[in-house]
Every structure is written in structure tokens, then in C-alpha cells.
Image (tube, rainbow, N blue to C red; front, side):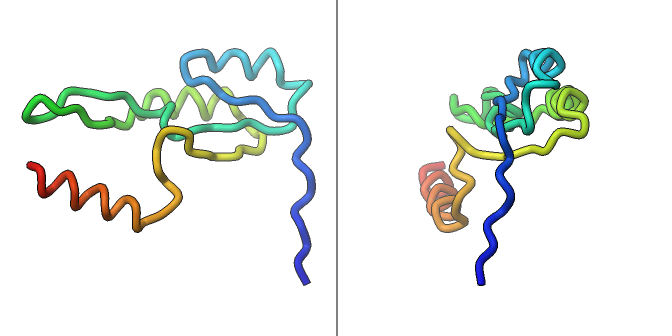
Length: 97
């Protein structure tokens, strides 16, 4: 029998450029939403292309801001939902290089 998870309550998105917002809302929220695309930045790559680069210092600031609050991780701009779409993307970019 399926048992649904307990409701999380009220959440707030973490904006990596303004982690101090969570500190101000700490007594009012029950969880924090974190998008992995906010932990990356587009940087120049080869042949005039760009690529996403992970920014570890941004993750460190985010984790300090979140502290012990529960986290819901989601993807808004990145396709993290399926290995199949990632594989198709990798094949398309490899063949065009």
C-alpha cells in the first residue's frame, strides 16, 4: 500500500546570488527549493560555443544558507529528468563537433 510523504509546508526558492534571504525567512518556511541550474554558469568553450560550469563556491554558500532545512531539488532549465534525453543531447553535440 502506498503511503504518501508528509506535507512539507511552506517553501522558498533559494537564489544563489541572494542566500541571505533564507536567513530572514527561516522562522516562516519549512523547506528550501534548490535548482541545480543556479549552481552553474555559462562559460566560453571551444569553437565559439558555451558550456555550463559548476560553481562549487556557490554551492558552499547555498549549503550554509540552507543549514538544516529540508531541501527539494528541482530542474528548471536543465534537463535532469531522463538519461535518454541527456544521451540524445550528447550524441547531437558530439556529431556536430
